[in-house]
Image: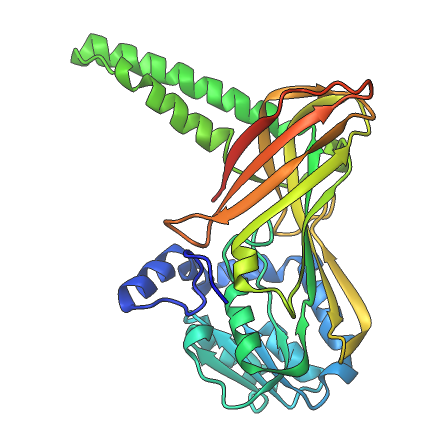
Length: 370
């Protein structure tokens, strides 16, 4: 299998790369305040608890691997569900807390916490079930699916199961309240730069006007072309949600999640201003074909559900006026950023076809998901 240039199936390749990745990503996961943010997310916790403790026949006497265990709660649940042994892998010093928590809950003989990168740790036996909370914003930000897939290919027994087992990524047209806020911020930044330019000329005798386009581009890219976290209200959705990715964690490859290209179409439901697209994901805990879960669980981050993932909002500027029955159609391309493979680029190309058959000009907008 060929792997995209900016994928990291082997983990950091040297100490310098490891230190950089730790500083950019893993560092915050070593603090309880970050773990608490996830542990108090009831949608997340209810789904994982129900998927694990609600399927004791799937976990009884099984060997389980928890990739990215954090505080160790999922590993403890797996042990409580009857697992014979649970290997809990954690890249940060949170591993010590996970070990302590397992012991405090009487599971120290079942839960074995190992500190280090999943890609660089050796597990002494094959695994029946892999559990992991690998999903980032917009599903794929953070690239934490990579080590899960690496562990699957190396350790999972034939017919073994992954929890979650399937995921889908959704995109929908919005009339977002956030649009006017971000546009006002952008206009204020342009105004403040102009006033700053006056100060530089009058007080410091320096004309900075040559940098006006640079400032405007920086602010526009950040405020209008960077994805923004949001808890969307249901009435901000003005059309169908389109699936732009459906993946089976049992079979998907790192290459397939490193570069994603998909057509999409969404029928508009109400006359409105289309000023953004919204993105979110759903995950399903179904077990595997050979070891299906008796109790199937869905974890959704669709609006108006409130989870720590929220939804991602991608501004469309200038906005487009749409009518009920209009069809928004186009394509999406999602790739990893070259300087940091845990962050994403997304390009959306679309046009709007009216009920009378006429169409708007095709537009392409490039976004960063930082």
